[in-house]
Amino acid sequence: MRTRLPSGAGFSLRFFGYVLLFCIIFWWGSLHENLGPVQRTMASWSTHGQQWVGGHAVARGDNVVIGSMVMNINHECTGVFVYMLFISFVLAYPVHWTARAAGLAVGVPLMFVVNVVRLATLARVAEIYPQAFFYLHEYVWQGVFTVLVLVGAIAWAEHCE
Image (cartoon, rainbow, N blue to C red; front, side, top):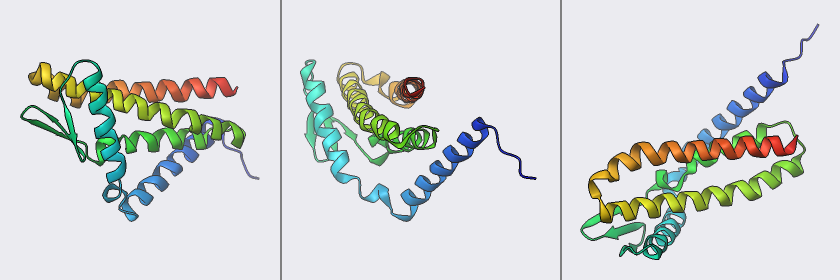
């Protein structure tokens, strides 16, 4: 006699399966070496955002130059790992594929915008109060970004119900 897993357990297994799959693809495909165009776009857009609020940053490739400080937008700054979590959540959630497609179509661009705002904010802080940059980068914005993605995923899931 086969026993069926509760829906929460099934979702969890699918979620972790997708996360594992994305991690393998990331490693096997050397994705971190191929994100240059995304890094340069984020550097450019975050520089424009920083300038929009009165800053003087300049984008040079995948670097944001703020006076004598250089903020390098590497593959981790693209939010690729947070995207992997969000996409895994959406794909694993037990709804119709059209709802998943809609969640990805709205969620991924919104996360991109939030990440650009994060980088623009960090660039502005680096210009005004450079002593706070490390703390805001490593702790505050990492947590805020993760919580926003979690809230977005839960809001999408509730909308699908």
